[in-house]
Length: 324
Image (cartoon, rainbow, N blue to C red; front, top):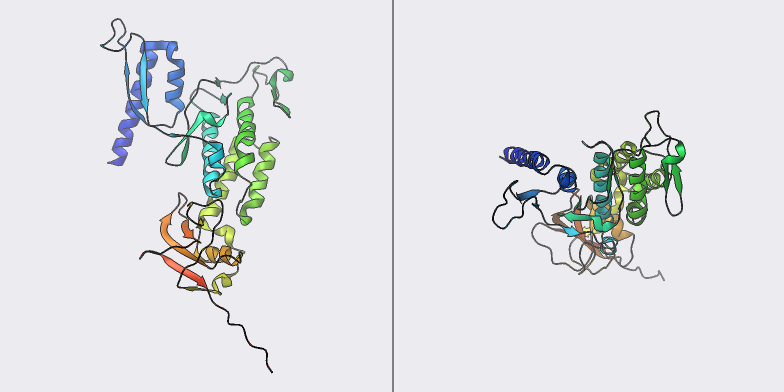
C-alpha cells in the first residue's frame, strides 16, 4: 500500500508541475522551482482558471499547500546532542548533492541563512527558493569565475563552453561549511570519529573536495556511528565495575532531556565507558527508546525504569582497614 500511495503522490506532484508550467508559464517560475526541489510533502493546490477565475480565486494566481515544519533555530540547535546536529549537516549535504545535478542543471543557493530551512520530524528541508541560481554563470576569463567570501576568495576555471564549471557546487559547499559545519560538527563529536570530522572540516573549508566526496565522507561517518565500529577501542572491561541495580543522579549537557542526563549510546559498554569517565556518575539506564540512527537512549540521571529498561550502577568499594 505504501508504495502505491508514494507513486500516487509523485504522479500528483508531476501533474501539478505540468499544469503550472502549461497554464501559467514563466510567471510561476518560483513556484515551479520550489515544487521541483522542496522535499516537502505536497498536501494540495488551487489555482485560478485561465480566462475566468473560480469563486474566491484570482485569475492567474496559484496557492500551494505544503506540510508544516519547524523553522531552523541555530541557537537551539547548538544545544542539541551531536547526533542531531550531525543529522542536519548530513541532510544538507544530501540536498546539495541533489542540487548539483538537478533537472534544471547545477543550482546554487544564494541565501544560506538558517531561516531558509525547516525541520520536519528532525529532517532538514529547504523552504525558500527565492534566491537560487539555476545553471552555471557565463564567463570570458577565469576572473569571471571568482567566489568572494568575507575572508576567502576562490576561483574556478572558465571552461571552453564559456561557463564557470562547478561554481554553484563550490559556493554551496563553502556556505555549508561557513553557516553549518563550523558550528555543528566538531563540538562533542565522538572521539572515534573526530579524525573524520576534522577531514570534512579541512576539505570543505579549503574546497578540496567536491560534493560527491563530501557526501561519501558523511555517509562513512554515519555507517561507523550506526554500526558502533568507532567504539572498537573501548576495552571490553568497561562494564567490569557496573552491575544491574539501583539508580543515581547525574546531569550533563547537551542532553535529550532537560530533567537529567540522557544520551544516545550504541551499547551498554559505551554507556559504561561514559559513566566510568565521570566520577559524578553512579548509574545509567538503557531505555527502550532509540534515536533516528537506531542508537539507544541511556539515562545517566535519577530514573525509575520501566519493564523495558536495564539499570546499571557502580559497585561499591568497601575500604579495607590497615593491617595492624
